[in-house]
Length: 272
Image (cartoon, rainbow, N blue to C red; front, side, top):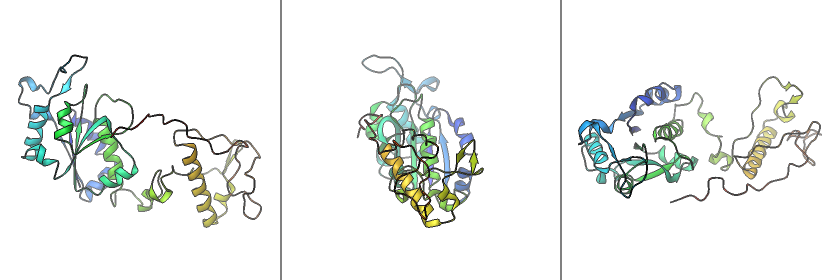
């Protein structure tokens, strides 16, 4: 896979490329490149942006600058380029990044990420040069660089050999293996700390029961919603009707732990 980033701040990605899973991916053939549109601008003084038509605060990345940058990098018309590789404009109004989209991108041989800055892109960049517009959340960042790192991080860890153990990427939050639900809770030593005990099933050695417990906890988190904080368990309270061999495999939970509505979407309606 070839991952290109068009950014005014290519030095930001030097740290990113030092991360272990990124190094693992590049050692196995993935390629990460950065390009600065200032190096290709036809304007004097390295200018890349201008004031928006119609007035308003902020500056907008110019369409002619991005055109020249993409032509200089790929030696072809950007209108044609997007038919040959995924060219992604990172913008708050784009399609929301999720695990299904990451899986889709991880199968691509080549991706270009366009990082906006200031007030973002001249809309003609998105309309005519980009094959996709993607958002990492319904909030605004100062530029697309952090969003580009999020996309690349999510995609690269899907590639074979990028993680220390192949199983690490199978049962993750929102994965197909978990039916799109958030990941189940994890515990480690000590088995009891300040009176907080690890659920007994995890200490039982019964792998089938552990699998059932994890899948149920994952589904519960999916019902409650990934942004909600799960209720704190009350000491001594257990789930009614649960258990194997007299032991509650789900562990202690609060008496009021009924499935709750996820409520209104905190991000509002998605666009596109």
